[in-house]
Length: 80
Image 1: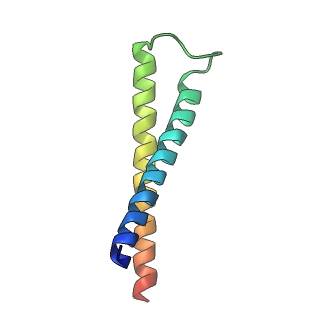
Image 2: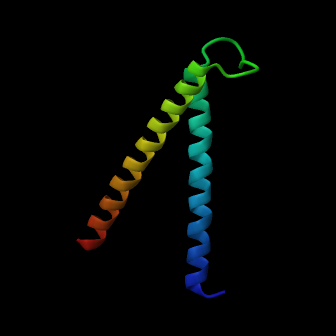
């Protein structure tokens, strides 16, 4: 396997790990926020679904902003 293939494979593995970590953080944060009672309900109420959807949207948006800012910072450092 050539160096370029190895780098691409490592980048894919890193991206997968980041997505998995983001999913785990979203689940923990949003479930803790939306279900304040002991345990989780057997079925989701409409308000629970809305809370989870809004929380997930906010978390994903925040992640996107951080990734964009990090990418811009890395590009600025490389160009110096």
